[in-house]
Image 1 (cartoon, one colour):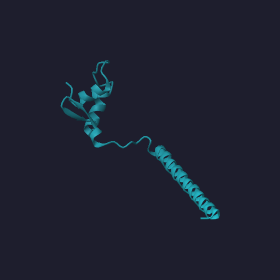
Image 2 (tube, helix red, strand yellow):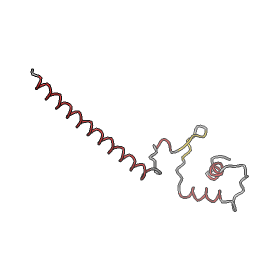
Image 3 (cartoon, helix red, strand yellow):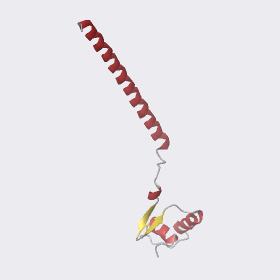
Image 4 (cartoon, rainbow, N blue to C red):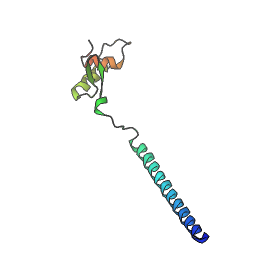
Length: 103
């Protein structure tokens, strides 16, 4: 092979490499931009798995998702005017008492 052909091959390969790097860079920037945009919109609302909706108390699993009636009872129990909660108790304990899990 002549030197002329080798130079042409190398030039074509170099141009191809530059084009591929440019495409990869654009792809990364596009992906990063999409990720940032998604974080701005969905930053507060994170997807949760169904298995992480509760926590264990003993052998029973407590469901954190409340019905409307239970929410009303918990709100009533946490209302400072109507409840008789010791100041040392936490809101979680008050909620558990309203749900009648802890006696």
